[in-house]
Length: 289
Image 1 (cartoon, rainbow, N blue to C red):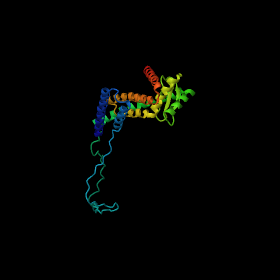
Image 2: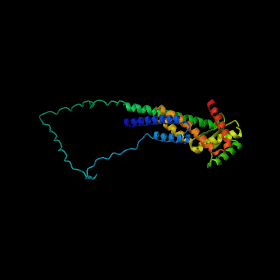
Image 3: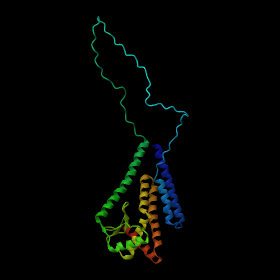
Image 4: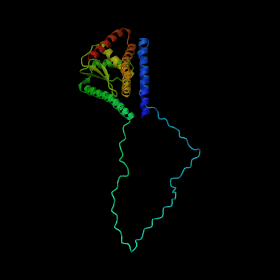
C-alpha cells in the first residue's frame, strides 16, 4: 500500500513537471506550433497519468533441482499413546466426592484493535477526494441530461437540413440527434453514449447556424468528448496536484483551437472571416452565461 502511494505521488510529480514544461514551451514558441500538436502532447501525457497501476511483477522463487511429490492419499502411521490406566478405588477408603467444576478463565488477554497506519489514512483521504471529484462531475452531468430531456424538442426542418449538409461535407456516417433546448445561449454537444447536438430555442440566422453546427460536428468527428472524459479521469486520480487542473484548462482551450483549425480547412476562404465572427460571438455568450 505504501509502495503504491509512493508510485502515485511520483507519477503525479512527473506529470506536473511535464505540464509546466509544455506550458513554458507553448509560451516561448507562441503560435509557431498548431493546436493539434499540442492536443497530441496532452493526450500522451493524459494516457500516462491515467494508469497509475503498474503491471504485477511475479517474482521467481528459487526451487530445488529435484522435487518429490507426495501423493495426497498416503497416510503416515503414527503410534497412539497407550490409554491411561484408571485407578481402582480401595475398599478401605471411602469414595471421595466429585470435584466441583472451576470457572474457566480466559487463556490470554483480549485482542485489541490494530491502529490505523499513516499509509492507510492517506489512502483513505485520496480515495475520498477521487470519489468526490468523479461523483460531483457525474452528478452535474446527470442533472444536465435531465434538464435536456425535460426542456428540449426536435429541431426544425431548416436546422435539420443544414445539419445533413454539413454531415455530408465532413464525411460522417451519421450525425448526433439535433435538438432545440430552452435556456441555452450557444449550441453545444452533450452526452457520451448517445451524443446530442443542442441548439438554443431562439431561431438563428442561416450563416451563424451553419458555422455553429460545423464547429460542433467537428468536435463530434474528432471525439473530443472522449478526450474530455479522459482528462476528467486524470483529474479525479490526481486531484491533489494543482498542475493537473492547469492542464485541464489548457486541454479545453487547445481542443477548441484545434476544432476551429479543422473546421476552417473545410470552409471556402470567403467564409472563414464570418466563421471567426460566429465563434467569437459564441464565446461571448458562454462568458455571459
